[in-house]
Amino acid sequence: MGETVGVGTGAPAPQASRTPASTTAGWKPALLGAVGTILVLGVIGEALAFLLYAAEDQARPSIADTARFGGFVFYAFHHVGLRFGGAAFGGIGANVTVALAMLTGTLVALWLLALTGRAIANQAGGSSLARGIQGAKVALPYAALCLGLAFVVRVPQSQAAAGLSTGFPAAHPSYVAAVLWPLGLAAVAGFVGGFRSHAPTGVMATPWGTRLRAAAGGGTWMLAVGLILSFVGLVLLTPFAPDVARDYFRPFDQSFLRGVSVILGTVLVLPNMAAWVLFPAMGSCLEISGGVFGLSGSFCFLSYSQFPTTHAIAGIRTPSPNLPSPPSGYFLFLLAPLVAVLVGGAIAARRADGGTKQEAVGVGALAGLAYALLSLATAVLSTITAKASGFGQAFPGAPGAIHARVGPALASTFLVALLWGVVGGAIGALWESRRLPMVPPVRIDLPPRDEAWAAGPR
Image (cartoon, rainbow, N blue to C red; front, side, top):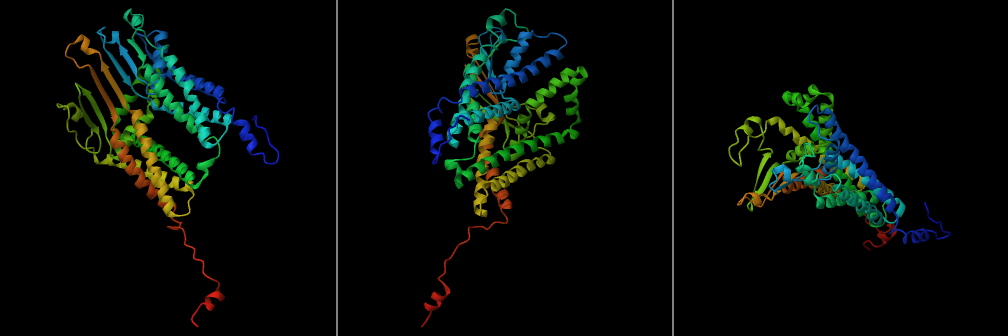
């Protein structure tokens, strides 16, 4: 739209007509897309908040506080920390910041922002890289709006101290995180949406560009299949733990709305649950770590050597207890990463459309690197962090700051994902390319037959 069609050698003319406007193009769809994404995520957050409000028979918070809670859920979709202080600790001046991400909401945000990036790129045009940069424009209005809303959903200290906020202490989203997390997420999603908005051009249209795109797609499939299979495995455990299922659905005995709110909350953290199963299944672990007085430590509570049974947890007496190994049946979870990397490697090889096994195996292994990077990003987002500070003012000698985190061990998660991805991706690609030659056939140009006889012995 809006392009002029040249005559004769018309290809350069449209490019020249679009280049000067490319820097200013796309800001309107960027703003509209940012607003639309915030509205959709806001509706999801408020739906959860008001479901909880309707399910509460007594001691309900005010409508305003319920709406603020929905706003806090919105920021939880972005891993933005929620900062509590003042009345939450008896007015001693301390504060605690807790950050987590409800990854279903995060995925919805990334999808909508990618669609916005595609719309921006289609308006601005250009090469694949230029389209990606154009699509990332959505990050600026999105981050600005998220920062502005952080001042709206807060519970002021004065209001909490006066008792005007029933059930809520003084709290607000971390203002720095309210800019940086939405900015980073929107920039990545917008770039990907813009980059994929048109057929590849330039370097990405070369054979190496095709291999890179195939590897990225294969790595994405590895993570998606792994998460899905991990959640399916978690569901299949339900018959072996009937008490857990009974406790989960018990809120329906109290009221239908309370049960629905529990299910909606579970849906919002399904990727978190799947990630916390997949990464230990690969050989990493879930850990609790923290630091105080300059000292730090960690404790792995879920791996192939540590399993948190109810009896073992009840008997914990030391900071670093030794938990029992998991039952042998839990080793079936190895199938989740195994199937995932084989499928992802095969998909990468198919998309690369190479001519030899050697090329296919290389693309499958490269997909493993993409899988490791995506796994690391997922591990970071699924981690719960907490930081407390300011207690030293009320309690002399108390530590100035205490920090803690619960989630996948980041270093081991990346390394085991890299190992699984590279090896499994290469094997999956080798199977997909089983009918191809190992290396390109060597062509030998022989002289014509008459010349060969003439050159023979005399």
